[in-house]
Image (tube, rainbow, N blue to C red):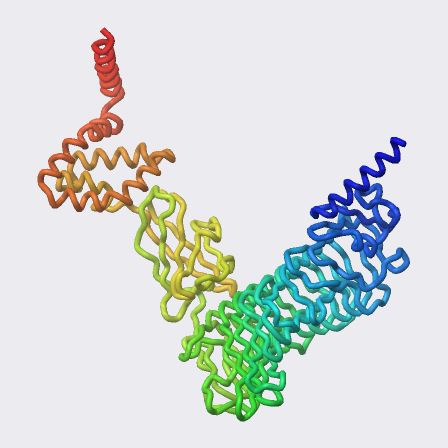
Length: 614
């Protein structure tokens, strides 16, 4: 009787936990049993298929190590449940489709955040699918491994009900049997959040990442393609906006930024590292690719970057992506620009990388090792614009003209400000590049971490750097420095180096603002005494340095007010006398004088106390 009562209580508790959400379920394909409770590792279910029938919103299902397959009881495709998270536990939870069509897909719309993490998917045509017609808001697939397949991760977004978002983060794709590792297609509505971030695509496949927009779709700037590594592929990342939908007013748009991706085409000759394509539809639907491309490294493809435009006679397709701070390496072609049937009514119908006088920005890219840096096949007179880049001697253009002036210098050339104050943490030195040089750090609102700056041989943290205007200016926040000459060494990701000297020295007219205003002379003995107190005592401890920073921030205004009023100067001289006396005692008196002063001070304090209490 007692045992039955306990069992009933456990069932009730489990049901209550499940109904209230945030409940944990466990699955073990080796030792589990779908007849067990699933509430802990010792009573785990055998199949994820069964666990998903029990879990409700905000629950998490933990998958223990082992192989999950049809042989262990799974039914494919496994349909992920809305707001139910899946997590690998304690090792490799491997889902083996044994040739299935789709391994995982969505069983319902995803309406709030949920996570799929730490699982391995392998041996199916498509390993994880967001199928057409599903609305996805807040799905995170993180830390998973994708094995043999035709397509690893596929998202087919085709509803305009809501702005959608999902994120594929820190996943690894390996041993793919051709095809595409990651494919994102949007045919209607807007994909505005999440992105493809910090993934490794290292397998044997045709395309690493493929992103398509069609009909009236928008892949917006909130969807980031960032810090991915794609290696050993035929093509790296391909973005295509294709007008369609049977409506000449439609515009397919891709604006997703590509930031700090590493693309390596080491499989051999041929292929495209980064492809940007815009083409109008059969009824003249428009298309635009305007994805800002920054800080990417693209190496060893037949063509590092290809921009292609295909217009018809009435409508517009265009590639206007900003192209900033990228490093391109290879032995064939750096950038290939293609335009078929360009629109003569639109000056910017040629592919270009921003920087055009009509707007946009391009520059500070590095081209290394190419037989041809730019290859143009453009049936239009307007010239693409790609100024302020570094070239290592290859022809700048072929079959056309690229406006590339000025070509940047190597090493970096810039002017540093003359000096900063010694002993002050947080001083800022500004480097201004000349017209034939530049700093490859972040534009406004962009990522840092692309440039390296060392102070006297010690690398500074990235949060000490800022580039308020791309390329021509770099501000460096300094630690506390000793007086003398210091050297900043700047290294761009393209390999350009520059060394800039500056002084840390105290200024005669700004070191003691109030005292100088009170005495009317920066060389007055009282001013020199206070300056000695600052240099010998206050700079040596955190409290003193904090006071100095406050004084240098507030002192100039106070000094300006005092200097205009004779009575204020007299009052300030009187108020400063105790500080001047203390400064002289600490910096100019010998030990005997200091001792006598201390005894006199203590004697006076003792006399005051006696008078108060007698």
